Amino acid sequence: MARAAVRETVTLAGRAERARAARAFVSAILGTGHPCGDVAVLLVSEIFGNSVRHSGSGAPGETVTIAVRAGDGIVRVEVTDRAGPGTPELRSAGRDSEGGRGLQLVADLAARWGWRRRGGRLVTWFELPYC
Image 1 (cartoon, rainbow, N blue to C red):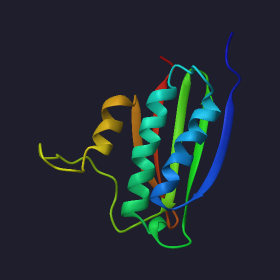
Image 2: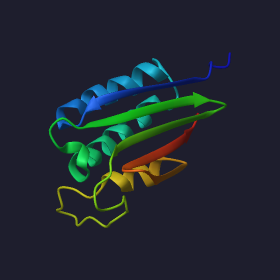
Image 3: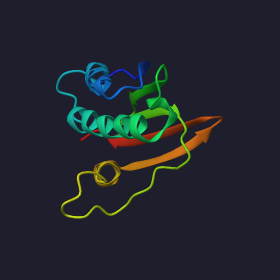
């Protein structure tokens, strides 16, 4: 039986401890046993963390919005933050580095990913085909 198409969003405080809520939101939207659920939850956690660390959304009172769209065999997750001065880019992490692997995970596990600026906001997204 095909799953019904869904599109839902949530806006969360731009605080690191809200990553748990971001993961729970994606998991709840996709539902128990969704073939892409575990990967989508992992990747939204990485992008949410980057938004809090590297954008204006990590400032007091700022937010990060997560949108999930699932249907037609694709899960698309978008994370929108208050754009910082940089843009998301893959970088090499040293063996002993504590960071720098998040976007590499996204690039390795997602079928497609990217980003776009929209006004003063930055949208980072990824797509996963149903497994």
